[in-house]
Image: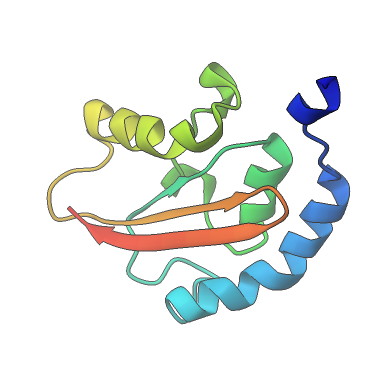
Length: 118
């Protein structure tokens, strides 16, 4: 059946939900992450949409410390995290000793993240 192979996501509703629940998730990961980047050198985010990247600015995360691949790779789903990390390493924007925030969400609103020191 064709319906077995379709995906329906209510993006605007999920984005609204994310704006409500992600700040608490971030605070649980490291206090202060919902308002800034304490102790974080660079953010490597999951990149499903420009709206999701814009939402990060609400947390006080400066664009110059966020690695972006959406503009030239598009939405590559879960591959955005390793591809974006590779881009950051290859370009020299992250190096040994840097502390990174890897963070992302999934459909239906699953949030995940880790703090990684290279």
